[in-house]
Structures are given as C-alpha cells and as structure tokens.
Amino acid sequence: MEADPDSRGPDLKIKSRGADRPMLIDVRFTNRNASRDEVENRHQGMDVSYNEKKAKYSRVAEQNGLNFLPFTVSSIGHIDERSSEL
Image 1 (cartoon, helix red, strand yellow):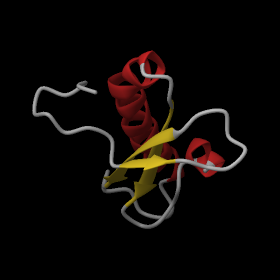
Image 2 (cartoon, helix red, strand yellow):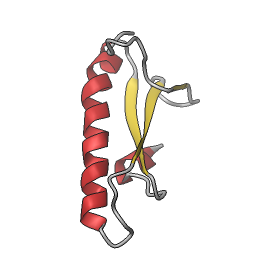
Image 3 (tube, helix red, strand yellow):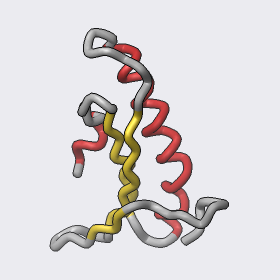
C-alpha cells in the first residue's frame, strides 16, 4: 500500500476478532503551542492533524479492504474525540 511519496505507511494494523476487516491506524502527536486554557486552539490543531491523516490514508485503506483511523494526541495528552473509537 503506497499513499506516501516517502514510502512510509500507517503506523499500526490491528486485526480484531469480530471486526469485519482489519484497521490501519496512524498516530500523530501535535504541538500547537496551546495551553490548557486555549481549548479552541488545541482542538483546531488536532482537527487539522486528524483531517490531514484522514485525507492521506482513507482512500488507500478503503481500496485495500481496510478501515482507517487517525489517532491524534496533543502534546499535553489530549486525545481527539474521534480517535477514541479505538
């Protein structure tokens, strides 16, 4: 599976009992210089990271019969709500 000009793919492939197909996961840690009080900026940075990963790998995963989940974490430990599907 090639989605990346530098030949790196998603970070993890998980096969789970009962799942209809394996899931690819790509992890990104973000640091948008947001303090704990700057919630809106933190979420904006995590949105950008999540959407970049989704755009990069979703189509390729689907073409290969796989699910894809971006797993985005801020530098202060907040996990994107959409990544909590895992």
